[in-house]
Length: 493
Image: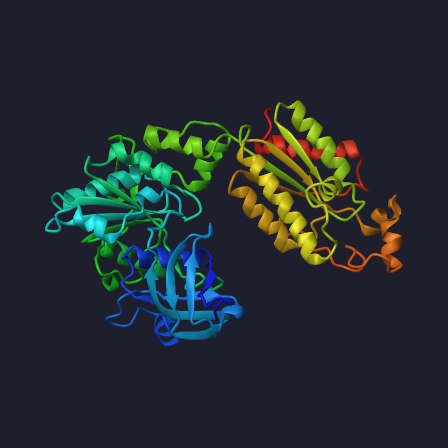
């Protein structure tokens, strides 16, 4: 398939396709391009990869049906810049159309992706070190607290003076935990090197995610590509059989803080009464949400400071407060009351009411399902930008579809927090309140696809709070929402 000028079609892969392509272009994955059906099938079977397989996971490219007949594709980043050209040697279907064939890098090096200056190629890393020395690679997608740092220092000592490479697994469209990982630099040897990679989590976009064991084996292969002789895996899973890895995987071992000696040590060396376990992610999040300091025994001060910047207290963090419910449920009335209370508490607030947005942001859209989804996405985008800058966006559309609400949640949580309020007022009450006569018109067939009458409303299963304005007054509903925001830490006590 080509365009009328004869040029190859242009396609932007999804997150998994871009992650695979990134590894191919950096020389990390030793393949010439995307795998054929047979090549991928050999690696998708349960159990270890076949003996001699150069890569432990399938590398495939999912494309829309309209590209099934393409003979060549220019693969671009989400900003439209060319990354590579794929010469298609096979097209097959596995849930979606998948194309196989070699890729040729574009003339210009990739510019898209977070922390691009740290996304080193294999050649850049290998040429900068003495490969006669052992190299310990640490692959991590989480901050390096004192436990991990103690484990790294112990491993380096056991290797008798190895070089250190920290491979930070971060998404292409965000920094992930990378800022906190980089903040641990002072606690590591002076010559430690950092590089950022994006590890795929599935064979292709839309495919099932791999197990933690398979992801751990992939991480070991990535480390080996950079020249590592040994690898420590922090948070990315462990291979089911370490012997299958191309480098020595240092065994996971439980470490605890020894309160008697005031340092981290292997758990079997510490008396139980002196053993203090590392905080888990939930405890760290709770402390950061409430603005409490992280303890010095747990993490270095620079890491704590980086985490505090990445996750400010909820009283300072952006929030998308999203009301959903049937027309006439009372959501707009409650949303306005809540917005006023949030403003009085000292937060910056923007109210994005469904009807107002329809007249301005979404003028010209119809009430078809596609346009209603687009309307909610527009609201979600604007709300997430408000949250990005520390504001509170109060939204009150009908938002009848679970998938679209989930998309808005994802957008919001990339920049701040998301709180979903389901206004579950029964349709009989909503219809009795109908000042605009919309329900009557819908039942008369004058309004097609009207939510609750001729089109479904998908009840949220992930609501943070449920209201029923037929059972409580407007003031009571507003008070319940404000109390939930205060209990959650988004409003000061």
